[in-house]
Amino acid sequence: MKKTNALRFLEKQGIPFTLRSYEVDPDNVGADYVAAQIGIPIERACKTLATRADRETVLLAGLPGHAELDRKKLAALSGHKKVEMLPLREVEQVTGYIRGGVSPIGCKRVFPVYLEASLLQHETICVSAGRRGLQIVLAPQALVDLLGAITGDICKSAGAAQ
Image: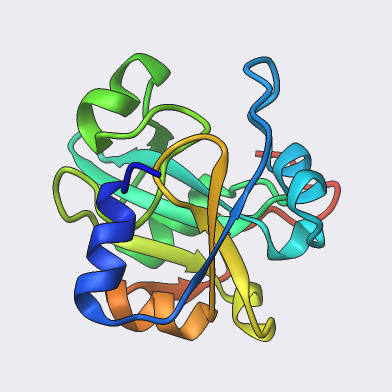
């Protein structure tokens, strides 16, 4: 297996993790598909979204696979006025990862990472290993410590509009 930047970084830092692979469906890169393929609950499948704050600063947001990002909450937590999704055409150029394979670990540059606090209630979560078809399973606190991630409420409440 070809190692990704995320895997090399974890190994270099000595962070314990396991890998889970799954069959890639190019038409379905959603967290629900990934969670079902690797046999974990959707609330433990951490999807990574690339955003841009105040039209300049790139932020990564990690949230449970079933949740929706609340951009206003992320802006408030990060100290910015406004947060928008990074256009898909820019995701690979900016992060080094393709859509459906964006990992908060081992991007081209170091970006601030914000994790939904509810992820910390689980013994383990999974994040992309930096390519479709491969997930890293690790303790959420290990991810926070590794990345210096900020945790908080960044998800929309059920039925909330933005």
